[in-house]
Length: 102
Image (tube, rainbow, N blue to C red):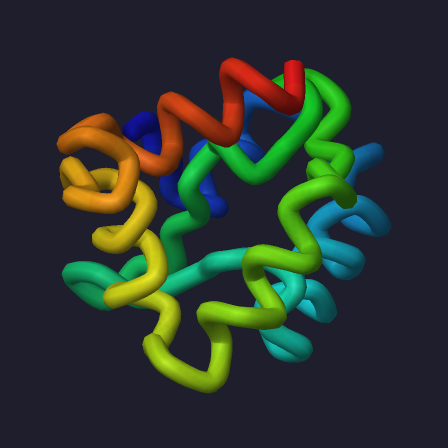
């Protein structure tokens, strides 16, 4: 599962993306977007966005996020998507979600 530091997104996309990052920050705060701190840096898993260039959230994931948010913190949610799941015949949820939502 690809993740990226939010600072890298700013570096790549420049100042015009400030409003988009504000939207992402709001999504992280409301738990509509998975974002977590690691090594004192904020990170976001990229599977939850429609495209890397526009950073539009995959709205089809929201029902699943709403089920998982009460059970997991952001780090554990990211891990839930990244690890094989016995209910999915040991496939990773991230692969199933992105494949079916693309």
